[in-house]
Image (cartoon, rainbow, N blue to C red):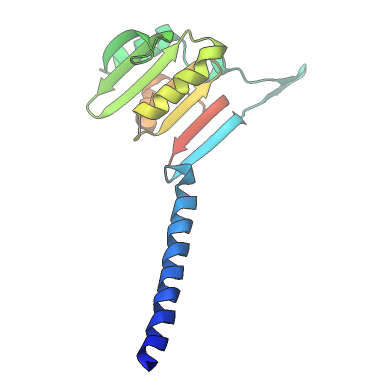
Length: 167
């Protein structure tokens, strides 16, 4: 009888600790991915102050022009593919997917404000391993690492939208 009085409370305590452990892990899983800096809205903003006041950063200033991006990637030896939709969706865009070894960049130009966020969520479903995933204005892109970021001609992390940076 005495053993039962000790075992039952011990089992209850162990069960309680297990429930707390599981609950804490579920709460941590809310971000779904570890070591990812998630920014919504204006993030990594850079400002130019001139004699005329403050100039706002535009997505076009941070994202290389399509022709310049293609030239940069060709010069660095990337294999380039072109698409006219975001993956298998019906979202129209001018999509460039370039690879070199295990490195990649996947970027959409020509999106509207309405479908840029939907395109970004398609990218979220598609990619797990990356350095940078962003919706910057009407541009959506995913880049494998910092080297590709520089090779493609990006000079800044300035962003006006959603941006995930994987550390």
